[in-house]
Image (cartoon, rainbow, N blue to C red; front, side):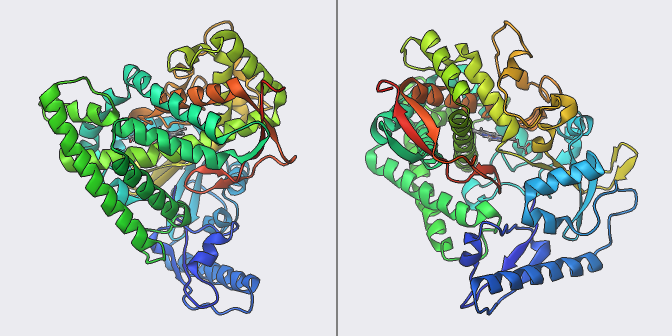
Length: 527
Ligand code: HEM
């Protein structure tokens, strides 16, 4: 997700924290557009907000003057600075821009000129066929650098290649099948201990706790002593809360804010525990020669082409990256899917009937949940309309010819799965409608095999919820198995219904997350 604007506000009346509480203010992190607004004094909150907005707009106007407009040869785009529109409502801005200017658009984003892409063949080139001419460096990338270090998500070149090669086996189908036991156990505990007949729950909050539970179990194994498990879960909660309040809306870690000290301490505690576990597991594996039991074991036993294992710091960075990349995205997917089920009772009833018929009360596993094509189509459709990664960024490392334009080295390309997933040319005139059945017509009378449907840029060249090309999501199989196992566990026991007629709003931050998804949960036995 690109950075746009950082408003530094620190005063008695309007603090940074105040700003973060405003859902209508999006604060992004590129240092080039820091707008100093220190010491805002305001009579009221609304007054403070007006002042911040006007200073911000001023800042953009000046930035526009200081930096040249779109370089010559750039594709045309909207006048003015895109940062203002992106600040107000990113999804609406993206849609309007595409409608008015097409699928390869030049944008001024602060003083930087970027390319917004929702065109199939350009996206395909950037992510796949010309992937070696693009890097992650230079684009805004995942926050949490202190936590995630130089892990897979953000590294480039030979460092990335080696780490990806070493990590791949830990995400193969057989490995994910082992992890699915932890997924089912955590989902069962949520269903049996936290949810109950008649409960009113914000399922997004519940799924956040659930996916954290799953990812820590799967990464570090079941047999962690309680004190270590508590330190990990507690410290990650502190770190994630910090992301949500700060980096989650784009403020970099180095800006001193109230939560920063606690965040640094949490990362230090995590480091101490994680390095300790790495040492302990290494010794155990060497002595017992037992089979790998968790993702850490898999990474510890991985060897590159020269037979070399991962370095300790690389191992630590990968574990932390997986925590960061694998938790929030999965919670977002589960929450949107459950919301669509709740708001579409017929779809929910069909999914539950399929589970009853095919599973006959069996415990969900990575294997048996692959026999549920309708539930798979519900997931695919949710990922289409609400892709958690709604923008994917790359920076070109050489000049690139796109259509008739020559784009200079170092330009950021923003590929938008969100726009591509709603393209009427690819998806038909009902592209904006939630209709799981559209996936059944893709493969009539055949098992859906939803992972296959995501190969390349999807079956129609316009579907990339997990990215595409060499840097696609390493956790795709993990995320799909997790979602199927959790939803199956939930739908075997409960029905979900909305408490209001309004579908949850989308908040486009780092991910496309929902606001609270408050649903009523009813036991199917009592129905
Ligand atoms: C619904 C869930 C998920 C979604 C929508 C998602 C989406 C994505 C996308 C779009 C990318 C590509 C980013 C880019 O091209 O810049 C990506 C990369 C990545 N994801 Fe996921 N992800 C999900 C779950 C997971 C899980 C469960 C894990 C691990 C446990 C994970 C680990 C990663 C990693 C390590 C990368 C970087 C891969 C590389 O660059 O080699 N993700 N993800």
